[in-house]
Image (cartoon, rainbow, N blue to C red):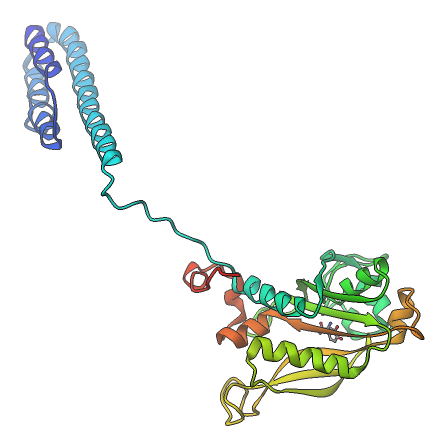
Length: 338
Ligand code: DAH
């Protein structure tokens, strides 16, 4: 058996493979079920016991040798085809998949750009805040329900450290470190202790706007927001301001834009012809004074809008949860221009 094995090793070592078929014929001849190696293992069973030990060692060596040789043949082949394809300039290139921006980033960038035309610059502040910046400095009375455990995620109590519930906290940060005139846009993530559903989430994004100077009036606020609405939703867009209440603005309003159904009534506007998009108002003099700005000299306006809501209107998205599900089928529909 020894001699036979030596002969086979000799024959196999001279084998060369130029094509995949050559390598396959090696496998068939030596390594397949009916191949030489298996036949030898069959013969091995018939050997007298005293020869089995040495023949067994030799047979295993042969098996090892044939397997290594077969793998070498195959890897030489794939190296050859690799270098052949590298040299072939007519082959198509490897596809290069471009990512796309998240719709929330797209909308945020577009809004930043529109207000940028009016001289607004962008600023940000911390997501983990204290009570003063989120509520106190913004004129929230101590028992205001928004401070309740139901809305706010508290990290520590006494002194209160919490996740900001709105980007209005950044107004305070900006007023602390900037002297008027101030024209600032403050986008960011906010957190509220709300049940997750198609319409609400425990985290979402807002953009806050703040404008403080001498002689700023409600008419300036109105014109600024009309400019934004027409730039973003189209030049036909109308706006409507409804009186509202926020502790940090006086007077306060909520702004609606005309629906693209042009008053005919549709599902999106619930047959009202109007879509609510933001809260706004004249900065309450208490807020200015809380932040060291003389309310007799300066006045200003502020506004805040939810980015998810604006994106929802723009792209007709039905379920707010889809923004944070990371489903590539959804995400890759958005262009990456801005
Ligand atoms: N902070 C408000 C909210 O989260 C939105 C808001 C309303 C911001 C009026 C403002 C404003 O700056 O003037 O609902």
